[in-house]
Structure formats: structure tokens, C-alpha cells
Image 1 (cartoon, rainbow, N blue to C red):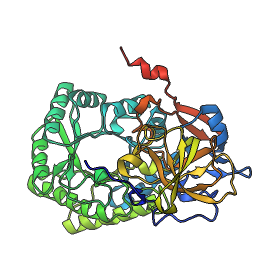
Image 2 (image 1 turned 90 degrees about the horizontal axis):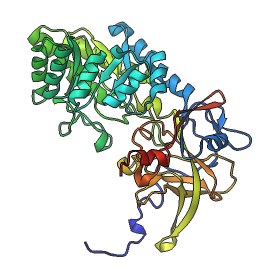
Image 3 (image 1 turned 135 degrees about the vertical axis):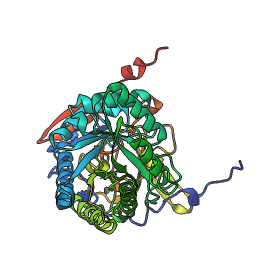
Length: 472
């Protein structure tokens, strides 16, 4: 490879993205990005769930994931109620499965069970959390494109309500496990409906060229229907689709629902079987920055109900029971991450330009999404109020990678210094779930806050934890 001098033209986003404007007051908290209880007090300190971040840092250390319990549960019940109401007349309501991959632990599983939501697990580990948290196995949906025999067997023997079959191998494995357990197992067929969701390539999941599901266009899904119906150990409950993540309107769901319901009608016409359910997946977006404008659960539910009822009327079939799978939309806005600033650095570039780097005590090991998906986040000074001018800054971590970026662009006070607390909102989904021990950095704790009190849901890892599995 040929080396050459790197000038400012190689510094991506030097002037900041077009959607980011300098704030009138860098101390303001934009409600769309924060848990509903987030406040900046008269003393300038940010609090969540009635607990000041200075107190959280003193008690639990930094970095730390903070979950607003009241906000999380309010968002969960908002989805539950919105979809129940929107589909009440059409099919007697809708089931809401929380997508555990966004964030789960036994306490969260317990909250969901108490609040009447169901549980969507992708692996044996997520299933184990659900069962430990007291989830009714009949309310569990097991996903996965490469489930092991052990995972399928465990799920069937535990009595999970439905297994989502993702390939022909899944059909045979699930049927064999059901036969051995002496049960009839409910299944859904994950159908690739050929919808291109306008999102990052790695989180768009319904176009043809990807690993999930059975293709509708090629006839794989129809063949899967025949194979499931041929196995008496299986009960075909319906069809499943998921078009991607971080989606802000119902247009993609409209195309997916029409195609899925077309196969639903075909099954009735060819096999005389009226499937009782369809699952339209999740992927509902949230606001990470001011450029994002997500729909409220009630708007989503009404829009999807209109789409489904219209499609069924056109096809001349009854509306089946509908399920959806929000995860990020519940957990994401309910969580923030608390960091402590270690250093700041102004890097001079050609043409008189410079960039302010703010280094914190976490990074890509606790939030990989910026590096992995080029995701955008916001941040604010949490431990005090500042009257200094806002400076376009980049928040980076402590890891040995130039791509170790937490927040690519944000206006932060010019007097930000070592020891200050930074709070990054909208980190309740996927940050803890995707956390690693890169550079042998222990993973942060998960701390729940509510009514002025905090408690640890998942404790901080220690160096002893890191070494415990090292048998050398």
C-alpha cells in the first residue's frame, strides 16, 4: 500500500454533520433523547429516576449503565396497551413480545412478566434468563438461524410457546425434539418477504441476500409450510417476518404484511388450513440524536392495524392474531451510560482547523455500535452546569483502536476537564448486550434507578472475573 500525507480532507465529519447545530445552551436536555425522569437540577447536576449522576458515580463507579425502571416499564406497557387497543376489533388484540437481544437480565424478565409482555429469545442463554426471571414458558418465542440441537431440545422440554423455524433443518430438528419429549410443538415460519428496509445493511433483515428466513419469492417458504404440515409433532401457528431495525414509519411493514398475508391466504387455499397468527417482528426506531423522529407506539399500532385489516379484506381472509417484537424501542430510551472524563486534547490540522477529543473511561467495549454501525449518539456534561461556549467535540474511549469512538460529534462546554462526568443517553439497548472485555477491560454494571434510589441489576466485572476463566 502507498502511504501519503493525511490532511484535513481525511478527517471525516470535521465540521460536524449537517443535522447537528450549535445549541443556544449546551446544558439543555432534549426530552426526546432522555428517559422521562431525566432532569438537570438547580445545582446543574443531571439526575435520572430521582438519583443524581454524581451520587451514582460515587456509589457505583464509572463507566456504568443506568436504567430508569419507571421509564422502561412505561414504554413496555405503552406498547402492550397500544397494540391491544389497535387490534381489538380486528382480531381480539395483539401480543407484544419483548426482543430480549436489546437488553435482558433476570430482573428485566420479571418486570416484563409482571407487566403482561411476552419474551422473544434468540439463544439458549436468553431463554435461561427468561426462565430464571419467572417468565411463563408458554409466553416465550425462540428465534435463531442456527439453533443447536441442545437449544431446541431445552426449549421444547421447557414448554416454550413457539419456535420460529428459520430453515428446513429447523423443521426436522424441532419435530424430532417434540417427538422425543412427547409434545406437539407450536412453530412459526420465518419468511423472507423481499423488503429493503432503509437502514444500515447489517440490520436490514428482509431482503433476499442475507442469512435469515425462508424466501417467499423462491418458494422456500411455501415448501416449509408443506414440510411442517407433514410433521404431526408440529403445530403450524403462523408466519413470521422481520424487515430490519431502526425503522421510523409503517411503509415497510405495509409491503411485508401484504406479502406475508398473501402466503397466509395461499396456505388456506392449498391446504385448507387457516393459520391463527402472523408475527410482523420489530425494528421500531428510537431517537439517538435530533435527526431521529420515531413514531409513538399508538401511531405505530394504528398504522399497522390499518395495513393488516386492509390487506386481509383485499385477500378475503379473516384477520389473524398479530404479534410484534419491540426491543430497542422499550429499552433504548430508558437507559443512559455514565462516564468520567480522563483527558481532553485539541488536535491541530491543516488549514487552521482543529478537533477537540474528549477521552472517557469506557469506550467500544461498552458501546460498540458507533464503530460497528457508524451509529450517532448525543452526550451532555452531567455533574455540573457550564457557562462556557460550546465546542464541537468527539467523545472517545480508552481502547487501543482509532475507531474507539463513543460519540462522533457533539457540542460540549469548552471548560470540560478531567474528572467531569459525561452522560450518553439512548444507550439502554444493545450496549450491555454487545459489550466485550476488549483490552481486558471489565464490563460495567447495570444499575436501576427509581424514586430516588438505585440498585444493581448486573454487577460490575472485576479483574478476578477476567482471570477466572483463564485456566493457564
